[in-house]
Length: 92
Image (cartoon, rainbow, N blue to C red; front, top):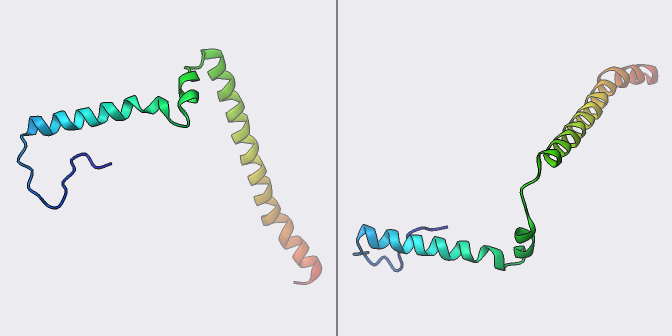
């Protein structure tokens, strides 16, 4: 997002206060449009989770991270330990 627009390389003779006012108006207009797009209804329905909801979500996320990490470590162990043993049996 370009904050200060300069078109056709025309020098901008406006004062700093005028530029700041224009920037503020553009930002406020953009903020007013947030709830009117495709996701406006979702944003209007969104709310801050309760402490209980946050704790449950954190526990489930942590369990998922540990499960995926454990699975990755198991695959690593198989690749390091079992693969050379199988290669030795096959004579590779």
